[in-house]
Picture 1 (cartoon, helix red, strand yellow):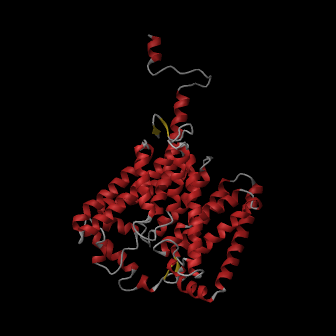
Picture 2 (tube, one colour; picture 1 turned 90 degrees about the vertical axis):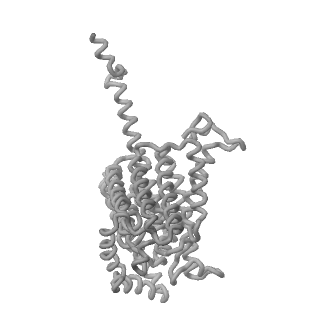
Picture 3 (tube, helix red, strand yellow; picture 1 turned 30 degrees about the horizontal axis):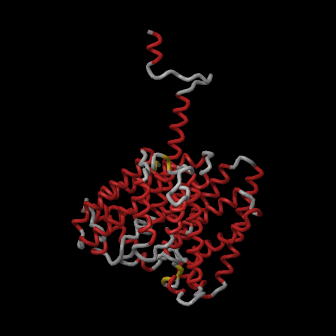
Length: 435
C-alpha cells in the first residue's frame, strides 16, 4: 500500500508526530479486531471505527487485487440483489438502512482480504486483537451471568450470558475462533511452556458454555474436531502423533471435569437441561422454525426479487433463522444464488491451503474450521448480519490471495531464470537470434 511515495509497511516512513507509519497502521488494525467484540448497541463502535479506517486505508492506496476478485464480485452481486428488492419492501426507509448496513459489512470483508493480501504477516495483529477482545468479552459475560457486580445482569439475556453482544447466539460463536487458536497452539507446542494459555482458554470455554447457545456449542465441537484432525493428518512424526492422541484424551477429560463443576450449580444445570434439547418448542410448532423453512422457500419460488429487506416478517411471526433462505427472501434469486456460490467457492479455494507449510497455515486452519462450522450453523440461524462472519470471509480470501500471489511470484522468478542460473531471454528474443 503506497503512501507518500513509499509503502505503508515500510518502517522507515514516519508520521508527522514522529511515530512509525507501520506502527500506526498495525495499531489501527489491532483496534479494529479488538472492537469487533463490542456490538451490544447499533451503530456499534466497531462500525463507526471501520468506516473511518476503511476510508483512510483506501486513501493511502490499499489495493483491490484480482486474487480475491471472487469475493468482491460475489459481494457486489449479493448487495445488488438486495438493493433491487428494496422497492418491494413495506417500509422503504428501514429496508434502505438494512441494505446500507449489509453493504458496509461487505466492505469490511473486502478490507480484511486486502489487508492480508498486502501483508500476510498482519494475521498476527488481527489474531492478537481478536483474542484479547474475546477474553474480555467472555469475562464480562461470565460476570453478568453470576451477577458479580451491580448492574451486571445487563450483560445477560433470558438468563443466558450475552457479554457485549445483543444476542447470546452471536456472543457464543464469536468466542470460538480464539478458542481454537489457543487449542491449536497447545497441540503444536509444549503445553508446559504455555500453561498461561489455560487461563484465557478456560474463560473462553466458560463463556461459550454460559451462552447456552446450541449453535455455539456445535460450532465449538465441530471446530475442535476439524483442527484436531488437521493436526493429526499434517503431523509426520509418530511420536508427536501419539502426543496429540494423549492431549486429545486429556482435553476431553478436562472438559468433562469443567462441565461437571458447572452443572453442580443448580441454576446452570436447569438451563443446560432446557437448552440441551435438540428440538425446542419454537422449532416444531405449526409456524415454527422448520415449518417456516418449507413455507419460505415456496414463497421464494414465486418472488424472483425476493420479499424485500425485512419482508419475511410480513408473512411469518419470526425471521427466517436460516441464512440461505434469508439470502433468497431478502436479496432475491440473484443474491441467494450468489451467497451459496461464494460459500462453496471459499471452501474450495481454502481447502488445498490447509496442507501447505506456511507461517500462516495454523491461522488458516482455525479460520477454515470456524468457517465450515458457521456455514453449517447458518442452516438453523441467520448469520447474515454477524460482523465476525464477514470478517471470516475476509480473512479466508486474504489468505487465498496471499497463496496465489506467492505462486505467481515464484512462477515469475522461475520464468526469468533457467536451472543453470542463466537469465532467460525476453519473449521473442530467441526467434530474433535465430534469424
